[in-house]
Image 1 (cartoon, rainbow, N blue to C red):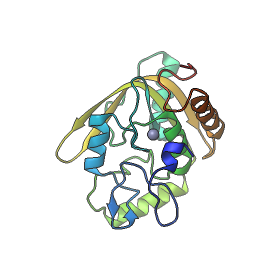
Image 2: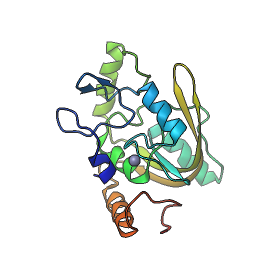
Image 3: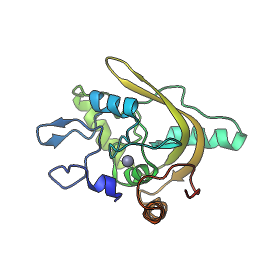
Length: 201
Ligand SMILES: [Zn+2]
């Protein structure tokens, strides 16, 4: 677990609660995205997982099967990729997204997050069903930059220029990448790495 995630508040079972997750009393609402917290992440360039500042340079996110396939296709064709349909999923540190891709069942589920309002019961059931097929496909993706829009109802993100593409099939696919990332950061004196993957600073 990245140290910045370790410092997050925990739910009653001990799971770390992402920065953009709303709370209802003592219960984090993992399936939802809090508008205010998400807006803070966008406006202050904070990681949506740990809430810490992101250095200038690339940002990472976890994408689902459909977007992973679209990115793979664009890369294979040598074409630029960007998600024309904005997403509610904010960016984060590389280590945080590698970690989240392995432990967070709500990440990268299409329409899994719909703001802070209560969801319909059938949507909640759908989350569980999608959770059951988790691990089929997805990717941790680095982007050179992102743009955002904060509307009264939503915080929307769009990501530009793929700089790293790490597709996965199994939920523990990125454990070696994560270990290496955490070791690299420790070796460089802590803090989040700036710059492109593989470049020590
Ligand atoms: Zn982070």
